[in-house]
Length: 295
Image: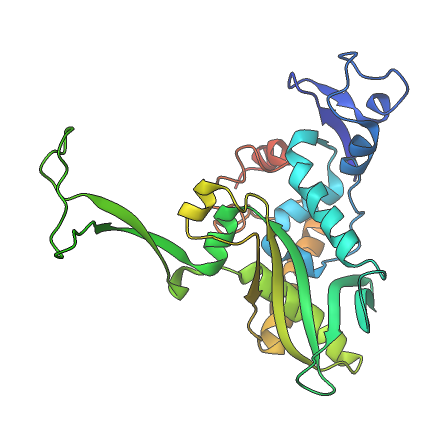
């Protein structure tokens, strides 16, 4: 079922159809321009599990397909930026000798990959790229960037001591950023791109490399630079997974969702899908209905 209501700036709800009608704003002063509101009001109808659903639990997918829910336009701002980025980079005006936004239909599932282009250095093979717009927090997580405190040393290699404050006399420290692959997390994106890869390879397009091309939303800010992210864009390589692992993951997710349609219940999202519970507190648009269902 589609979203039926907007959450206004005063946290009250209004039917989307009313809001989008002439003089339909209940506050008589629109929070956003009409084109923006029309864009954020759109949610794709559920037609089976798609590759981009890798990070969603079965309950979230099922509830969004069966439950009326409300949208906070403000919280969809970055999603709109992402859509705009995809549209711009996939425009034929800017692509050459590539398959961009190429649909691959398989039974009831429709898959749309962002970009497949010839590998200039591997004849007859292709590079699969997915465009993303991430904040610095997510980029750090994708790269496995961690921070640790290291002592500040003088020209002779001795620790510099603090001269004032509550920690006077203790060594002065600064944060050092470093990458640790044990903390890198591109699980969802790896499943998604490998599912796209399988679709293309089944059509005769062997894939040599996969990557994310990320535009960093807060790139260039000093706070972002201090976190170890010094560029506005970044390419993140994506590993190849065994086909059977990818098929098993998506088939199991689809099995759980299909069963929920039959019995009217599916277990709560796991810690990974719910971001250890943070997604349930303000980031999930069907959280109220989810709580009614219990565990």
